[in-house]
Image 1 (tube, one colour):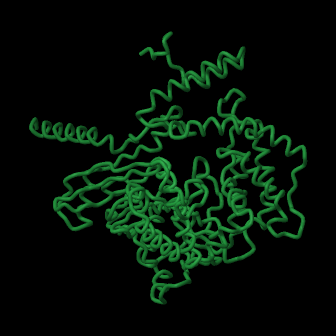
Image 2 (image 1 turned 90 degrees about the vertical axis):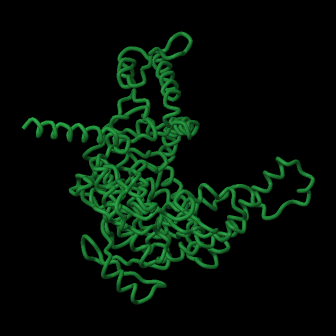
Image 3 (image 1 turned 30 degrees about the horizontal axis):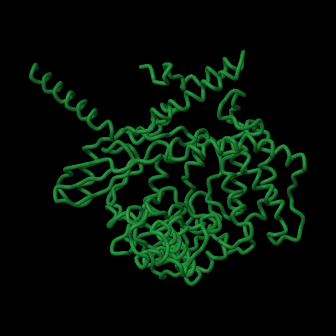
Length: 537
């Protein structure tokens, strides 16, 4: 009996030791938050059975054991691990955090989308070896185990490869966009999940396979499930028409604002304006948005067709080998929606400076620093030119999308409509004002259905002063502190000290109840500092 007790105690100690050893796998360790850190860390804390994940990964690729596991990366919604097996082969494991989106749906959507892109569209996407969309499994968490993307991340090599190599990568990028563009997914009237009926440049056999194996379900983007939205009955699709989607954004937000919007007190340092703090003001603006909804999207229906698109085709998500794209990763929250809203001009090739397609005649006489600057300008110009030339040839519909009158304002109006309470009412209102102002430039011969009076414009300008000050403040902190308070581990102490100084300045300018309230709400910034500005521990 004593031996049995000792054996049990030994196992328990071993289990605790293992759990402590793997704690950095469960916690978010990439940075810190200056405020609301406890909540932020809780959302990203995901405990799971590491040994079982190793076993599942090894079994899924037909090897005996996993001999090494490291946390490769973590973002706001997932943790990514690299597992090395006893024969040297590698697998990638992805564990979603609780804030990634709805349980079950988020993982199943990502798995299905990657499988669809790889098997139906023939896009280079990592093959999935094993997955579970429920946490009630030996791993004790949802997971996806997939092959490692071959090659190197384009973010690591783009600045070093030659222009002719970049031309090949651009060609592959345009080819991927053509494959996505060539598959249209019409939504029928059945509720819940719709059959993934596709049309475009794919074989009849693959069309049949797509219809038999895949369905289009509700969106899993966390914007539709964040905070109380997960528990209230809002519209998450699939939608029959693009107009239905646009109106759903407003209906969802109005419902949330009426039930859950909490006003910030006047002393809140993140309170931009009285209008921003008024649920009624937001609702009134959403009603204007609903009135103009039928006209925001282009009249050309081909630009509003339901299309699957990868929203984030930037360098870190693209892998290359021998100048060819070998893998496109990060398909989470990808959805089928109106092409006009889906397409994003790739950051990889975007250039906003003066276009210069060849070196000037006096190039040889320039100083080295000037030569380097001009050469960079020429290369960036040529990269954009190559992409636009190939797109015009292969995907002319994307050119039409890009050339839509007031296209940026139209798109941003819809983007800002997703959440004005946390995202900001001013940019949303500014877009609606611009729509009215440029109404006839968009080709309409009827009066604009919404109107802002001169008084409305003046009030908007006054609100904008405070908003612009905040925007300038955060722009100045870009790369140092983000708007949600995130900063790197290395800059945490410096950032905390800076905000503590701002708090002290604010307290000096307040008196009475206002000062007392502000002091309580910013107590998280309190930091004892001596006369020399050093922290007192």
